[in-house]
Length: 119
Image (cartoon, rainbow, N blue to C red; front, side):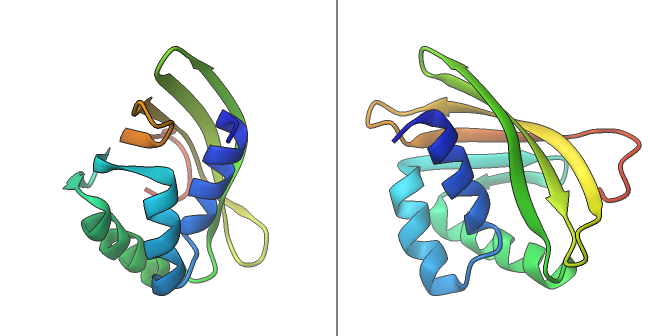
């Protein structure tokens, strides 16, 4: 899977149903993975799935769209936007990730642009 396709697939997980999230997280994230943003550090796919469920409750109909991906060696940087159900942009930011030997995302850190509407 190309880096662009991996990030697009990962972004869709944030608005997926729980059963789909489980399968897709296994496909996109390494067995030992972490996610970190301003709200804290999360270890493991199950904990991240729970966090994504909370996101869905707080941002009804929200979805992430990947704007660009740059990568080299085992590192990637994705620029994204969070879009509301009505199509307006709620948040923009970037996510940095290291990549495991099997090509799946391992450690992801999200950064939110200041001045965006959501945090």
